[in-house]
Image 1 (cartoon, rainbow, N blue to C red):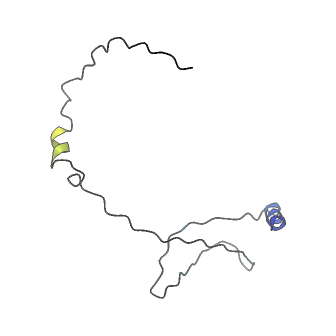
Image 2: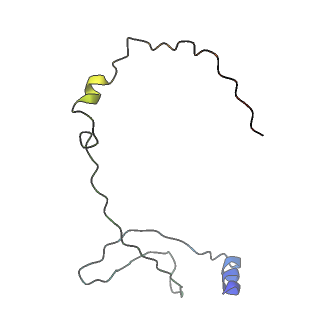
Image 3: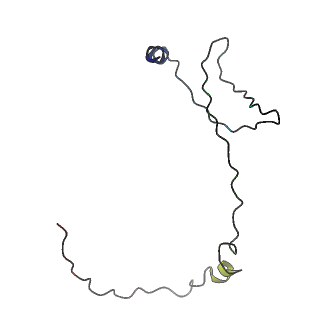
Length: 98
């Protein structure tokens, strides 16, 4: 197999990877149509499939615990009141790790 791979690489025929999402119909068969730009040649195809779990809809701000209208009431509330950072004092000197 390694010899075949090296031969393909040396001939400029690199393996290509394509990722896509598709739907399995009521018949339980996955149909794939993938244009590869190659005609009249034998190809080796590897298929790995995984079922996609639908994600839950995003929670509202209220569902996350924020009071209704909180951000509307507080956004920009300090525009005219600059925040002042006062001196922080001296830091404690701690023992060094070895």
